[in-house]
Image (cartoon, rainbow, N blue to C red; front, top):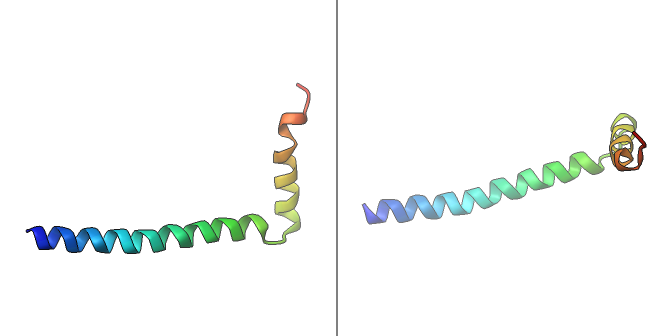
Length: 53
């Protein structure tokens, strides 16, 4: 039982890290990939705090 738990824990830690690093890279790529439509959306979102009610 102990060996099974340790094996599964090591597997989850290793591949969980890989999964989260890949997800992070995908989010960063999405944010910085050049696109006119997304640039306008991101610029509009960035200016929300500066808009008057």
